[in-house]
Image (cartoon, rainbow, N blue to C red; front, top):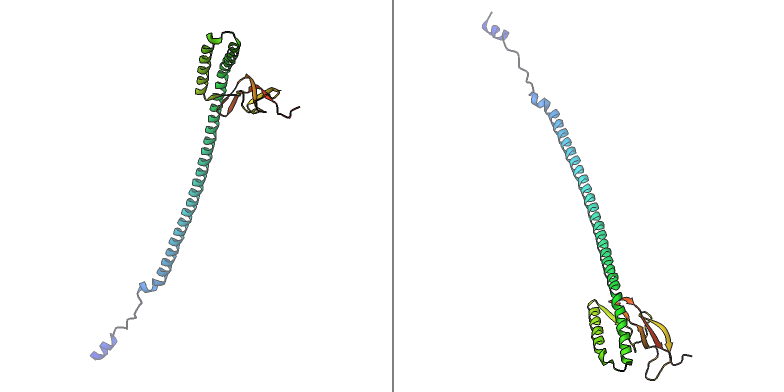
Length: 206
């Protein structure tokens, strides 16, 4: 057998080219990556939704807390005004109660002065009585109490009680006070005691 025949006999078969395994698996890897991206996006969307819901809940809680604060403040203001009103009323009533004896003293002084004016020798008592009366009026003024119902004042049904009317005399004005039987007193805008008076009648009164 010749040498050429031997070489031909032992000639190696042709090698088939095989594509790399990585190339065969590439489509599956791409699909897996796309699926992972979708999953991550879903997670982010879910987290965003959760945060938005929490934010809305916090805003509702804040609004409710603010509303409760406003209601509590309004109730506190109302209670404070009510308490101040009750304190002022109690003070006014207390002053009025304390004034009652003083007003009776004033009436006695008025009567004493009237009697002294008619006496034969009033000079012995009048100065002392006048001094006491003026001191009493100063004490009342310190309590924001003023006298109402003096002869010559215009009659005011809100401050004066007309016991009767008297005929108009020369120099007098119709509808004004003639005599005062009990002086009236007011504290601030509050009437403590009405003045009891007689009033000059109108000119055309029958």
